[in-house]
Amino acid sequence: MVYVVSQDQTQNNTYNVVFNVATSVSNDATLSSLTSSVTPLVPAFSPTVFYYTVQLPYGATTTPTVTATTTHPFATATVTPAADVTSTDSLQRTTTVHVVAEDGTTTQDYKVQFNPSTMTVVDVANIAALRAGLTDGTVYRLTGEAVLSYKQTYRNQKFVQDATAAIMIDDFNNVMNTPYNIGDGITNIIGTLTVYNQMLQFTPTVNPGAATSTGNVVVAHLKTVSQVVPDDQAKLIKILNASFANPTGNFATNQNYNLTDATGTIVFRTNFFDADYIGSPVPTYTVDVTGIYIQYINTKQITSRFATDIEQSTSTSQINHNDIIFEAYPNPSNGNISFAFNTEQADDVILSIKDINGKEIYTTSTTLDAGSQIISWDASNTIESGVYFYTVIMNGQTKNGKLIITR
Image (cartoon, rainbow, N blue to C red; front, side):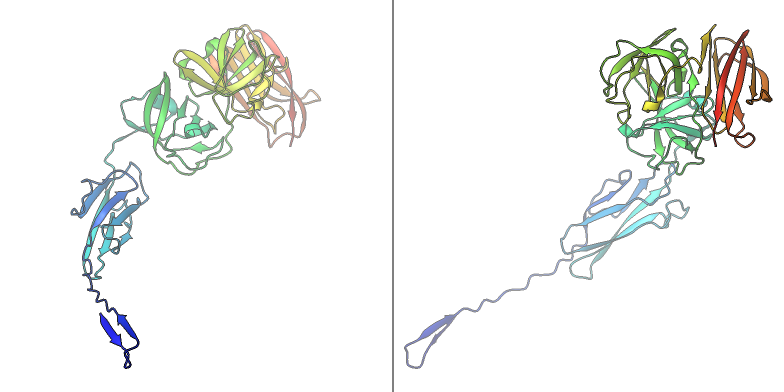
């Protein structure tokens, strides 16, 4: 403190001088936390442990994100990601965190080495073989192509099928986050099998990437209610000439509606919450219903994907007697038509198609096995737009119908 008095002794003032002692600069170059965006670090993080490993998920090719926090607020941490986690060189698979203390000279490196998965994967060629797999955590790779028949935002669920079977993909963690459309073919789906309320489901562990084909036609399997069995789980099926019991009000989500055909009753479950028929009236007329078959414990359930999956039945679209069901679709079409049959037993069938002048332009005869069978006719590049007529002879019965071809 300095006390000052004027010469004439009439004025004075006091000045305070404060001396600040400089504090020392920190040399702390440690981290208070270190995390990886995938599986945990080994060993568990400690500020005094400088080397860690991380086991990558099977099939991972992208370098995980490493996040670091310095212990001292004025220290800095620079993260240099691993160059290539698929490399055989461990240095290429290592992310380095370089910490510089406040003093600018003290440094410390933390290293995180990413190691490829040692998981054993069992290859299966088709969905039927996949469905025969174990639910013990075994990882399966479906090497054949599966076609997407439906997807919904709830649990990121996807339904896929091939010529042999179908399966529901329950993708809660959104592993398969590649955008897919109905009709897309997906190859090399990898994951494990589980059972939930007697419904087999597939949990993916790797994103298979872009679709391997697009625009595939997803064929609905013609079934009577009595013919639907557990092996049909997740299939797109179609039930003809069915009626809703006590059809009143509008469709609401997460509800059961009994749907009956000549052979039995199945539950129509409104379990696709994005469906566009929610809020629409329950049909009071006879319908042909397309939908995904869902099994809930011992209850058979079918869930339509769209309003167009619920059509009013017409006498020209099907035969339903002597245990034979038949349908031609799409109709109208561009000339690529499926003639779908469902029979209780093997039988011979003759199919012929004529133009409006009565000229036969296509004929085939074959023996169909029992169950759902398809005869495909692709005349999209060989005939003109117009009206054509088909005749189906099967089990001693004849069915005539009209086809409309448009370009």
